[in-house]
Every structure is written in structure tokens, then in C-alpha cells.
Length: 555
Image (cartoon, rainbow, N blue to C red; front, side, top):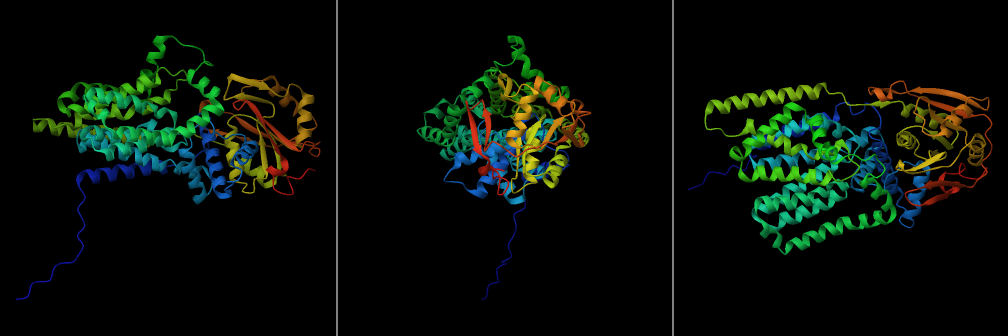
């Protein structure tokens, strides 16, 4: 008797409902990240420009591989563009960004695309965590609201460290919760790996330590701290993060201390300090979502799993207790709170009510909330500015290679485009020619030039032909007015005006002015001297080592 042949056709597994919902949300993230990805340049909080230049440095480092002299290479690169932030922020994002530049080429679009993997990871981690703690509908709604939130959209499209840090923290938090639930060592080790990477994304991720402590307390799982594997997990975190933090504390310890203490800022009272982040939360979430979050906090102990509300409260408390004492308060740090609040906001719409009509009403209300959030996201206009890229292109295409004196805002934006348009690296952007600050003027500063004669000496020493200034910048230094008055003399010629286009009121009617020095003389100083207050030393580099032949040769 012959048997019937077996069907060898490969049968694909039908995706589950949670997987379908997750795929839809991930596509939403891609759409938001790619929407208007080419609009505008780098400006946000000044930091964005420095993060982009740091990514260019990693790209060039990977291409050149100066393994025999990495420190000298770094100093030379900084001296040439003077807008790099390798020593102030951890390097994780810069390596990812550098690889993107290496593969896709240096551009603003590429820098923004480098944030996309972290946005996808953040959404995936949060969805999985909400699914673990409640159900697929809460995971879908809370994650969708998070993705469509204006603050989230902003940091999906800006070259900032908030999204990479949030992604690493959410992924680490997910594995920590899994470890608390079943005690499996694999979750603990995965948590340690992600926590170490989070510390290499940004210092802000240290709030994870408080979350771990608070979560153990609220879930009454103190026995999880007695696991011998915890020491090995801690070793993984230390092995990943300690080398960088020991190095940076040794090099820029005073700058970091001043930044965290906020000693350079006007001191505020205790009440204002305690209310700072709650007030910022209102601005980011808006009253409707904040009120829904409050309602969800009241209902979660009855409608969600018992441990869910406790863990979300632990996350919120950890963020508040970590960021509030830090002196350099920034409203954008509430970004790390948002997932937990949106978890609570979704609870009233996604819980399994006993009465069918109530479940149907909650589902309809959830769709309304999602539709309103989607409409708000569609109408949201990201802040932008343009004008520096055409200036950089003009210099690269028509200027003689050499030193360009710059006095204006966000110098990193000009440095980025100058390097992006100039693969041979034939230009040096001198932004520390007139004065220098230690991150902020209020921390420490030094005036390098004080009068017209010293400006002329600076131009002669470095053979500077082109000078760029901002026409309407707020002048903080006397030398800025002296320079602008000097540029009106017959010794200089206005080459071109570059108006700044923007939707931000503070940047309206700003114009970049490109001047040519008509009395340029051959460079007399073989060294470029750059003062770096955070290092407590100067960087002196030979022009022969900075510029390719024949531009680097002494003239």
C-alpha cells in the first residue's frame, strides 16, 4: 500500500495580532523620521551641530585609521574645525553616525538617518515592555501616542543624544523587568549589556540605577539582588562604561562638574527646583494627555496587572529623583518620563472591562485619541533654519584654501558643511580666534584679542583672506563690535550676504556676511594655536600637518 506524498510546501506562520500592531507602529516611525528629512540644517541647542561634527570625525578616523597616533590625530581634527564634542559626551552615537557617514556620505540627511535605528529600538523595547505588563492594546496605544508626541517627533528628526539614550534605557529596562519576573540570568546579562551601552550614549542614563533599586523595592524582589550573577552583570557594565568615564573625568572633570552643578547659572529656590520638571512635563504632554495619565494612575491598580503600575511609578520616581538635583536643568530631560505617563494614559482605553458596552466605548475613545494625535503629528512643524550650507559651498567652490575667521552662532553647523563639501579638508575654521569659553561663558572665558591692531596681527599671522560674521547676532564681547566696525573699512570687501531662512522667531532677520581681506599677506606663523579651556592647555598644530600640499606649506 503506497502512502500519499507529503506536502513539502513551506508554510509561513501567520503573524499574531501583537506583531501586526508592532509592524504598523514601526512603519509609522519610519514615516515620521523620513518626513522632511532634508529640510533645514543643524542648530538645535548648539549640541546638535557638535554631535554631527563628532560623527564626521569618527567617519574620517575610520577611513584614515591613524592607530599609531590617535591622540595627535584627534587634536589636529579639533584644531581644524573647532566644533567637536568627543571629550564632552559619550561616543556610542558618534560611532553609529560615523558608520552612516562612511557608507552614505556626510550630509544632514545621513546624520538624521543615524537616529532612526535608535528610534525603532526605543519603540520596539517600549512596545514589548507594555505588552509584558498589560496587553497588546495598551502596548499599541501607548506606543502610538509616544511616537506621535511632538517632543518624540522632534528628537526623531534632530541629531541629538536623547533618542539613543532613551532607546538603550528602555531596552535595558525591559530586560531588567524580565529578570525580576523569572530570575533568569540571560535577562540579567542582556540588561547589563544594554545598561553599559546606555551609559555610553549619555550620562542621563544613570537614572536606570535608581529604577532598578525602586523596582526591586516596589515588587518586593530583594532576593534578586542576592544572585551571584549580579556581580558578573555589574562587571559587564563597568567594563563597558568605566574606561570612558575615567578618561573624561581626568581630562574634563572641571567642565563636567560645573555643568552638572549648575554653579554658572542663577540659583533658584527649592520650590522652583522641585516643580521644574513637572512644569516641563505639562508643556511636553499637554493637559489632555496629562489628565488621562492621572486617571490611568487611579485606575491602573484595579485594571492592570498589579506589578505594572508599581513599575511605572518606579520609572517616574527614578527620573524625577535623578534629574531634579542636577543644577543644569533642561526641560528636554522630561523626555525620559514620557513612556511611563503614556502607559497610564492608555490604561482607561485598553483595559478589559466586565461590561461589553464599556469595552466598545473605550475602544472607540481610543481610536478618537489616536486620530487626534495623528492629526496633531501631521500638522506639527519641526523648527528649522537654513543658510549656512550655501555659505560653506561658496567658500569651498571659490575661496582659496586656508584659514577662515568666524564670529557667529552655531559654528558647528558651518564646520559640518565646510567638511562635508570639502573631502580634501583644505579649510580651517577659526572660531576661537577672538575669545574662548569653557562650554559656557559663565563657567570660564578668556579674551584673546582686544583691539583692531590685534585683529590685524591675527589676520597676518594666519594669512586669513575670508571672514564670516553674523550681522544681527547679540554682541557679548567688545571685540565683536570692533571687528564689525573694522570690516566696514576699505581694507575689506563684502563678498556676499547669506540670509538665514527659519520658522523660529529668535532667528528671524539674521544674515551671514562673507568678507574678503583685500590686504591679505602670506602666513607668518607656522603653527595654529587653539586655546581649549576645558583641557587647561593649548593645542598647537603645524599648518603642514593640517592642510594638504601645497596649502600646508609655509608661504
